[in-house]
View (cartoon, rainbow, N blue to C red):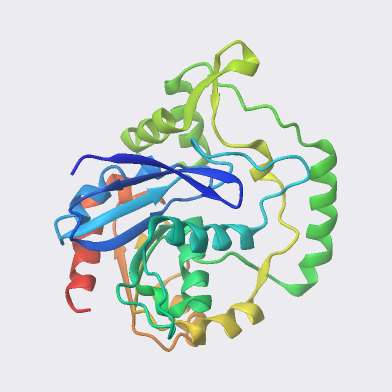
Length: 298
């Protein structure tokens, strides 16, 4: 089945979504990372469809070909969770029956920010989620003492941060910038991300620019703390697979298990050597095999 582009209307915000794979396959929704697009799954999604699985993805608000928030809006993390809930409704996936049961819960695959969204969503809508695959991502936590400072930074960002798209000289220039930000990112992966994330900007005489909304870079005033995560984890019912990159910002497995100790559902942690944060691009085959193995025992 070829890739089908779909526009989802979520409470007045348009998100660009994609569906592909056999219509009779188990539903799988892929959630991309911060400042990325759903195209970052272009190598992984076809491999998962062999399960068989029908894969869905969308560009998060402010990313890729989806709408930016309007005047007075902001990108609070909780809104990504609400968008996931509404996107499942709009796509007709994992719909609850009158008695609260779900006939075909969805498998969530999230990278980085998308992994955090998937994990938190599985806690608040546990019946709708069959399995979690978390690709080099968990909620970023702060200490309670850091929250007042983040509120100050949030207010300052709103006053000073421009809204115009960040221009680049070429696709290759954009890929080079990505590698400077992520030194371990492989050149081929950076080029794929740049090709999907850059387009001509009519507001700058069609000069090439990143598609993402600059306000995405503002500090969040509502961060998660360790205490909050501890209350959330026991609510998750879906088995989870956490895949670390070889060059990752995540801690070692022993520390991760301690951090996720309150997770009552089964947890498998694997590491793929010689990969960067974007391991699902650089090593799609190994990532897909780990996910398909996890799905096979559901």
